Image (cartoon, rainbow, N blue to C red):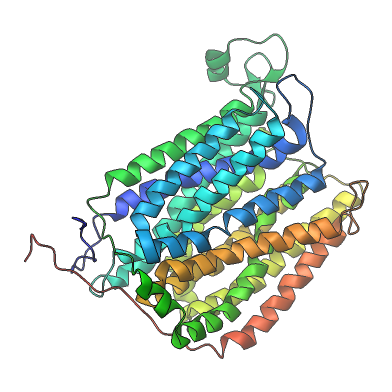
Amino acid sequence: MSSYRTGPLATDKMPPGIPYIIGNEAAERFSFYGMRSVLLAYMTVYLANPDGTMAILPEKEAAVWVHFFVGSAYFFPIIGGILSDAFFGKYRIIISLSMTYCLGHLCLACMGVMGNTREWLFVGLLLIAIGSGGIKPCVSAHVGDQFGKKNGRLLSRVFGWFYFSINFGAFASGLLTPFLLEGRNVAGTIGGRVYPWVEFLVGEKAQEEIIFGPHYAFGLPGVLMALATFVFWLGRNRFAHVPPMGATYFRQVFSGESLKLVGRLSIIFSFFIIFWSLFDQLGTSWQIQARSLDRIIPDWIPVLGGYELLAAQVAAVFNPLFILLLIPVFNYWIYPLIERVYPLNPLRKISIGLFVMTFAFSIVALVQVAVDNGATPHMGWQVLACLLLTSAEVMISITGLEFSYTQAPKAMKSFVLSLFLLTVSFGNFFTSGVKYFILNEDGSSKLPGASEFWFWTGLVGLAAVLFVFVSKSYKSKTYLQEEEVDPVDA
């Protein structure tokens, strides 16, 4: 019998286990997004066998594999959700699959050292997909499980901070990991600027060379994943451990009422598939476009002016940076301002976000038109599009996370959140399938240049219009966990 507390405390204050979950999430997301931010660049530029022979992939083919990996990582949540809710509980699943996650990073560390580099790469990505995917619904549901009716009002704020921690980790990794892979040094300079700390770290170089390389770029995320696992373990006695349901779980999940609920949610979730099919192109189509842009930061920007960003850094840095800035802006200014003239609920936030996303992709489509015509637009235009795309993310993804938890019956929290995460999987599988379908045998595309961007723009625009009508027919109902009295206060 477990000695852990099995329900949230009957308190109006913040649950004691939340800091451990937030700290774990920041480190784990650094690990995942750091590895993911350099994956395309590694596969298309640096992939090599131990004997030095190159094994790189064409850009379009690599993009197919990246989306397939992301889709796989968000497919395994459905398995993790069932195992946690029915058999093992969220905490045990998170700890055990975190070990699998760490093993995947170990495989990536072996790339280029022994054996076949491509085999190490794909085995490592498979293990990371199983580990990261399996824990995703459990961690999100574990956050909600810490709250009862007395402090339920804090749930929205904590999911905001939870998402904040995700993007803090993503911002730090997006800034650092591409540099570890691609940053170059010429006698202590990077991008033409002198950095004394570079000379301190690597010594003066007589010729241009990569400072660190793939082992550092993939090794640091592995270390951060190990740290994330340790931080989560430290909080084990502070958490509410909601026990698994056993066979009762399957009777409830497959009851008529539960299936009707899943059916209603599935209609809403189908629009998240479209959102993710576009959003996750930040790491593929947008990164490829960034290679053709002027990526030098303007001189009028203090400290960083004159520095040239790597193509892998543009979206990987600005998207999480904007998230960190926009979460409080939306919570304290934009949402209250809109509320004055247009009452908001989760579905209305999502609806507005889909229209904003349409404008974001319109901008990158126009940028690609300029590139196709031989121009070299400044990356500022892609940054502007990223600002709009991130605004859509705040309204769609964060809202969807909270919406999924509150709409799920108590016995189905991880399962419903895994369905929400499954939309990321289906979105990336859809994108991977489209990119594979339009891929010619010579590596070119049936929708070259801006044509593909306009395709995605039209798709999300159509989804935005349809969602207005679909959302009006959805009937909302909120479910929260039962509270438990702290023995100290009893």
